[in-house]
Amino acid sequence: MHEDADLENFLSAYCHQDWQVEHESSDAVVAYFTASESGGQIDAVRTQLSALLARDEDEAALGATVRR
Image (cartoon, rainbow, N blue to C red; front, side, top):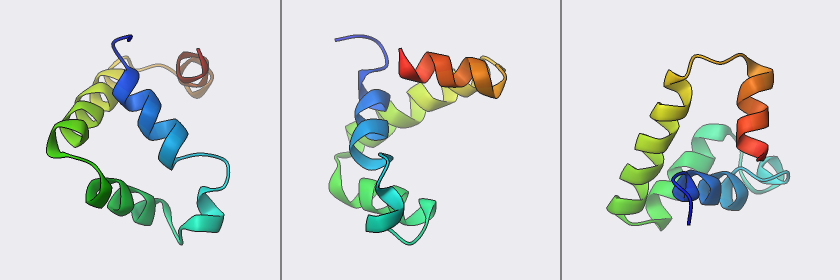
């Protein structure tokens, strides 16, 4: 398992291509995630997402990182 496995799971399981069909907004996706997962999982995603955003990369670089 790599260091961003929890974030990868969040993105693929909750922020997938059909999220707009299943939820009214991105806030609703996050609410569903936080209601469905453990506190440890939520904290791990928060930490991994913060680390990713702290890299201060442009959108193309962030996209490449997330798709790896």
